[in-house]
Every structure is written in C-alpha cells, then in structure tokens.
Image (tube, rainbow, N blue to C red; front, side, top):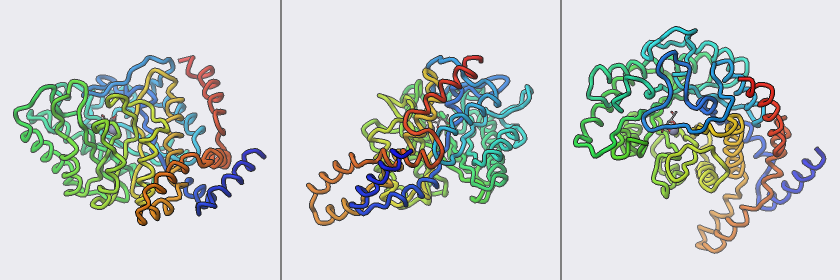
Length: 418
Ligand code: RNT
Ligand code: ZN
C-alpha cells in the first residue's frame, strides 16, 4: 500500500513535468467502460437446445476444462472476472445465450423474457448489457448466407431474427437505463469467386432496410453493423465488406463496427478512427488480436491496441467510441482470458489518456519531426505502471499479478468440478 502510493507520487511528478494531471486521468478511467463478451466464457456455444455453436468462418479452438455450460455458470464466471477488473463494465450477449428452460424456441421467436435472468443479474450488478443477433451455427445458415440469401425463406427467417433481437435489445436498454449496443454481424460470403457480387449485396441492403424500418430511440438502442474481410471457407467474397458497411452505416446512421481482425494485417484500424469520426456520430470497436489471420486471440497490450486508444484520445472521442471485446480462446482458463484481455484494453486506454499529446502535436506543427519521434519514444517508458497499480488499488481489485491467485482458487473450487 505504502509502496503503491509512493510510486504513484513519483509518477505523478514525472507526468506533471509533461503537463499531464494523473489524478484527472484516474478520474477519467472510472468512466471508461469495456463490454465483456459472453462468448469467451463458453467458446461461442450458447445455450440452445438444438443447433448452436459456430460456423460461417469463426472458430474457437482449445479444450481447456471448466467451460461454462449454463447461464448460471456463465454468470458466476463473469462475476469472478469482473471482480478482478478495475472499473464498472458492461456485458455483451449473443442471442444464442437465451434461456428457454429446456424448450426449443426458434431464433425468430425469442423475446425479452428469455433474457430475464441476464437482465435481473445485470441490474443486481449495476452493469449495462449489449446484444448481438446470432446469424450462424444454425441449419438456416448452412448455405453460408443469411441476410444476403437468395433463398427467400432463409432471408426472411434471418430478418425476423434480427428484428426480434432489436426489440429485445431496445427493451434491455430501456430497462437498464443505458443504451444497448446491438451489433449485426453476418457470415455471408463465398469460398470461391462469385459471379454475382452485386446481387447478394443488394439483398443484404434490402434486408437491413427492412430490419431498420422499426424505429427505436437511440437512448435505448444503438444499431451497429460489422464488416469483415474473409473467414474460413469464405475466402473469396464477403457480402458485408468494409465498403459495404461503411457506405450503409454512413448513409443510414448505423454505427460502424471495426473488428481489429477484419482487415488486412498491415492495415491500421487505428488510422480509421479519425477518418470515420469526421462523418459518423459514433463507432463500435471489436477489440481483438489477429495472429497471422483473423484468429481472435486474447487481446494483449501490443502496439495495435495502444495505437487504437491513442487515436481515440487524440480525437477526444472516448465518449463516441464503444469498446467491445471480441476474442475466444478455449485453450486456456477462460477467466484468465477475459481478465487478461480486459485489463490490457484498459491499460491501453490509460496509456493513451496519460499521453502528453500537446507536446508531440506542438513539435509536429513546428515541423520538428525528430523531436516528435524522440518524445514518442520517451513517452513509451514513462511510469505508467505506477498509475495503473494505483487505479487497481483505488478500485479495490488485485494489483499486479495477484489476481492469478484468485483465478487459481476459483479453478480449484468451481471450474474443476464441472
Ligand atoms: C466474426 C465477428 C463477430 C463474432 C461475434 C461472435 O468474425 O467478429 O463479431 O466474433 O459476433
Ligand atoms: Zn467481431
């Protein structure tokens, strides 16, 4: 405790010399929310009586014991993870996490009542909920097409599903008093070169138009749409490509979602933030880590993550950018995965907030690019860790690697008994 405070005092002085108020950053950090995706807790399986699981090019690998199998198990794991992460965060549900008491309820028939346990639990914890239609892992998605399908029965089924999800999401937002961000991602695409790229895109556009005819107050529901480059078995063509989503989003006031794994690996998602926010009201980020491909590895504090947060900070846009995690690793303790990824995302945000941005902009404006580069390098080794530890301490969560002990005990007492 004394050490944490002493280190923090030192860090405070170092940052102050660059004009940065660390106390103010600690305050700002309390407002930052990250949406923790439920699908890391059970390898994207969901609770459906039939169907379920992944398809459409997404895949969780690994067979680490202890995967959550029910809503109660998943909520218990969530509570453990949240207790090890500083701040108040959100939870992100997919439609396949509906709880139907063993009854088969088709995806186009789900209602808010199937999420009652989630909502009551979120209320108890005082956290918001975000939502996602699940347009994969289902016989109706077997062709690889959903909202862009040329089979009218299939397309209508998924339209009804997404409509049902919007109704649920808006009701959740209203009940919890915090807008529910609902992200639409569909796997539609082809393994080999299509002949009718335009045709599927026209159908997808038509489906989205129809889905969005129902209007909801943005106070309750934020509609988002996620683009993608490719998936396994969907290498040649993705209907909802970046251009499709960017065009649709800007034209129809739908929030664009950038997933960090959905671009060419040398393409910078960070660079897209300032450009997009010039035209869009807000932005959803799927914080992920592609390793060689869109592999959805657990997020770590790497250059990409830091650059992303820096761009949000430099655009003064933390209130316009929703941070949602999107990774799934079944090869390690799933709570370790959640906590590692969320803490990394928060660290990147804190590093960005602590950046003496004015100083580098000043050098840039003077044309002194040498100083700009040198300062950027110096900033990398400012005593960030002392501010982070202080934040964890103040927020009453374990400091440093202490949280691993909690996970170990939980694994012994709970996970290993599953
Ligand atoms: C898939 C998308 C999508 C999913 C989740 C489960 O490539 O990234 O966001 O990961 O909806
Ligand atoms: Zn995603």
